[in-house]
Amino acid sequence: MSLTVVPDADAAPVLQVGDSLGPYVLEQLLGEGTMGRVYQGRHQRLGRKVALKVLHPHLIQDKTLVARFLQEARLVNQINHAHIVEVHDFVEDLFPERVYGVMELLQGKTLAAQLAERALTLAELCNIGKQIADALHAAHRVDVVHRDLKPDNIFLTSREGREDSVKVLDFGVAKLLQTGGDMRVADTQAGTMVGTPRYMAPEQAAGLEVDARTDIYALGTILYEMLAGKPPFESTVFGQLAADIITQPPPPLPDRTQAGEPIPKLLLDLVAACLAKSSEARPVSMAAVSTWLERAMQGPPPKPPPPKALIAGGVAAMLVGLVVTFLLLRPEPPPPAVQPVVAPPPVVIAPPPPVVVVPTDVSLSIVTTPPGASVSRLDTGAALGVTPLKVQLPKAEQPLRLRLELAGHQPLEREASLQSDQTLELSLKPVVVKQKPRPVTDGVLDPF
Image 1 (cartoon, rainbow, N blue to C red):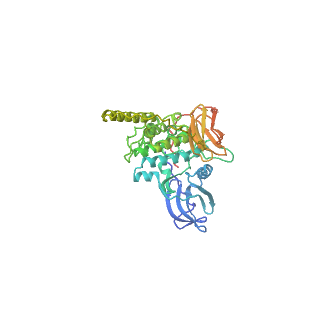
Image 2: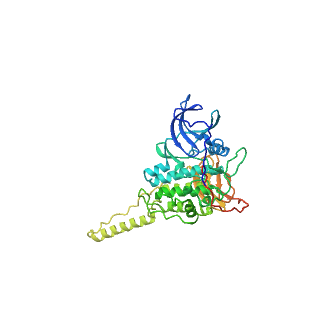
Image 3: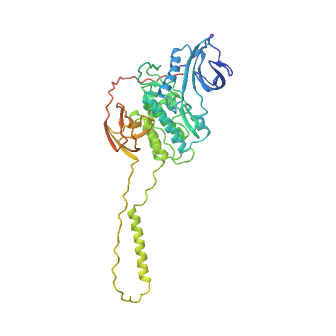
């Protein structure tokens, strides 16, 4: 099915470089898509440079598209994360009629462009993957699923001396799982596919319901492509591509990256888990994926040193051998002269000074029923690990606020004291969901 859009004869003309848009002057065309154009703009009074995402004039009459355009601005501001592009404003002008968003201007390149230029090192790959996981974990915490995660929507920019600081783009087709308050989300009809086919999860390719684990599958596909140089499934025929994603296992990854480094088993296991056909078999959250990637960044643990007893035994054996050799080879000494026996002076042994131990860290243990819950800090969003969990944290007066998440269970927030060692034993309540039978349809690609 094809869609033909007939431009409105009365629609505003296409903007050109040098034109004004509100308080901004357009300096450069950065890109163009099916929904609109992106310009580099400069505030005419403040001089601040921004990116202006302008909806095509002939699409403004489609209220669904305008609502989706507004949805992206609302969702991004609701998430508010350092690795997600900032949206400063959303404007609907009437004369002439224009709709546009004002976003932060990013300098750099997309992950797709970076992969086309050169292969990534394992350190770069794990660092980029972890930043993506952290950004999506923040989105999932407010029940937002991206649904179109792909290398073209991952932007690499320079920050704090690094060239691989991540910004996740394009939440225009994101889905809010639980609407509340004044939040209203333009959503697609059941059975309609939204997203880029190569990075779709099996449930998404089948037109079924999606959740946070759909984004986990897409991140697994991106990790696979960064390691192998191509995504796991590449058919140019959509029907065949969807069938492969739904039914076929991904081809095995090579032993080495495109840069020639051996791929650690920990990373191979993570990609395989993310690409599981069943969403239940994937990691429980993006926080768990982030922790997994952080461990992969640290590399294999160093070889343990030999036990002290073994070292001492070896040294003792060597000394005994030297003594025996000396005794066997030395000449016979003359008989000693008789000396008077003089008692030695008494030896006074002073007791050692007391050792003062100043604790700087406390031990926090978390046990959940059932186990396997991901634990993250509410103040920074950083992942601490998966239960059962034991971590060392700096001693502090203020309690630490934690969030625990496990698939199929209600999220749980708790405070933990950091003044002394503590063990938390928590029970997670299952989520009771009434399952509604859903027809499996072939689905229709959303043209936008």
